Image (cartoon, rainbow over all chains, first blue to last red; front, side, top):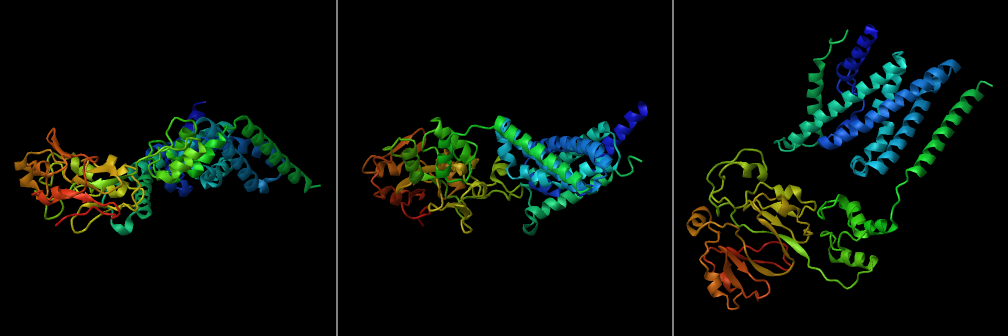
Length: 196
Length: 274
């Protein structure tokens, strides 16, 4: 039992910090740059990504382990996983439109873009590749989403400060955001070696 | 046979997901008032927030439900208002169109500069500091918060004077700059020819003279000059009545510090007298 908890803890730390989906794996940069203009929006985006990520990895894990592996249809993986993710994004869109219209409006184009967000596809792939149990997959996807949200909120905070900073003209806009992202990634390198 | 299993499987999955989504979309459908869409189509669609509602769709909802007046959108102007009142069956109302005006002439070489400011390039930040890098505590800081907030690029900083200039052709009277200016130098005025005092300082003559060559020193020469009695001195401020003013311009000539200006009717810029 205690080793199981230790494994889960290891999954959390490595997924959220050591192998941070954005700052260590460089996956999902589109919403990362696009939705980090304000802290409030970035938290909303983080929550939407968390929701889709967790649901998608549960559904794909079940489909994978109970249908596709027994039938030997592993080659259908990309197609079916994308189908699952697209359906879930539509689901989130319907629910948000009904219940949180303000967040729905703030997210705009980025909500449908979660459909093709490589971070979510990557998590569903990695979840089955690592041979996790269902519980581990749930914990893993929550941790990855947590790492995504942390990175997003960190950058949003930096960008809110950057708005008042004197940035050289040729670096204004996205260039300085990418520089800030690089520095964040270097900071996250400090977590390497934390989990063996 | 082998080809059938994956085909059927993926087909079944797609069918199941599709049915689920269409069912949920029906169940959680948000009823939309068709009038809201009509109103939103008429609104400018700049989503500037000048009306105080979250974007044009937010205002459209309020106008359609009657919670906001048809002229709540300052950007659209009379054309949009007329269209909206036709949509809502409230024809025959009239409205005043407004524009932003800069009420300070304390630019370079006119207002005294007492310190060099090298902090965050924002009027709001500079205004937080105790004192002021300009001699006048009420004058324009010229760091361009109004320029940045203007959704219509109607304001620019004049390089010669270092003061903001409002282009009335582009200005829509949304009032965002008025709300943004930490020193309340910008004001919304009716879009017509008028005479106004371009100084907001309530300081005494001695203080104003020390800080700026174009400040109002409350000498009240204009009050005595005006043949119509349109200018009064109330609560330490010169007030020009727009109803009584005949635009004769005598006060502009007599003002010893040239702080009374004529705001143009067709001219896009504030006319500054030499």
